[in-house]
Length: 308
Ligand code: ASP
Image 1 (cartoon, rainbow, N blue to C red):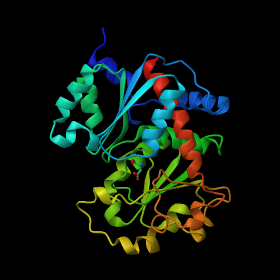
Image 2: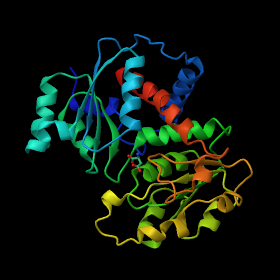
Image 3: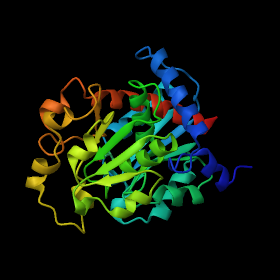
């Protein structure tokens, strides 16, 4: 008999809970998908499985790539966005979940503005739940695809200097990346304006450093990961948005401080002229579109894992 605990074990709620071995297994499988890639070719590995994509926040890359991943593995997928669902008519999360459960999906991919929402779901439904971003907490598949993209350019994560720059306070991408990179011995430097860089983030994992200075974060970096300013989550900070680019926007002169073969990443959506200049976004060093491409392979590996 399946229990809620089995669902928790089989799903993917965060990077913090994963071991190095589990992460390596997902990355290895994603790499196999990348190498085998024959556009348009589908397998029927997950035939007969129904994946519900339940998105309470907007998404372009994550939702589409989960959908493509499910289809490439032969699974059926149904996408539910909140604006079009009964949640906008006042239905509670529990009632929505019970309704969904009655439709007997085999797994749910969920994005929600509240940190911990997928964990709540996992405690109540006996099926795998995959966290596609919960509030400011975690975005595990983003960190996995980021690791895969870094490893397309480096042989190992160990010893790499990774500068994560921007709105760290509200970023689930930063948190998941810190957990993953620290597990593999990378040096992580978090950088942003004081209002967006709470000092307690230094406690997230061993060896994480904090700085308000872009030059310090970027000097000799192997990877520069820029983050979007999450205006939709800024209830508590007052923020001079117009000045942001002047202080924390990535420009070519910053990139010149990093290692010559540095890669520039961004989880998207990017705001040119706010987080980074167009020149950098479109430069040789930018791997932003490779991240999107790898998102499909990582999500195929994750779906396969939760059904195995
Ligand atoms: N797409 C990422 C997320 O959902 C990053 C962002 O929205 O800025 O967290």
